[in-house]
Image (spheres, rainbow, N blue to C red):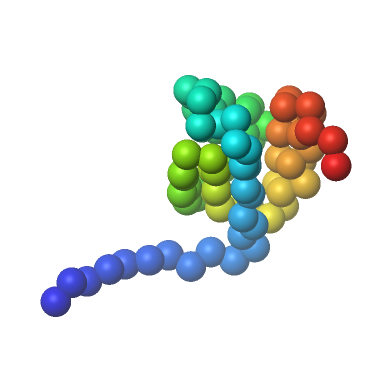
Length: 77
């Protein structure tokens, strides 16, 4: 049979970056991960599609990561 291993992580948060404009823009994921790295946010897992980047980060870094990305991309809530 097929075996799989996984690691459970406590205090994890999902960070979702999404936008229709990502379809036509190259390098968005690289830019997002560079920005997260600059503030010390470790990314544990990633999934991507043409319009979304979803990553698992430490929940303690969620608020500062969201703010940094909102400020960088000039996103208003």
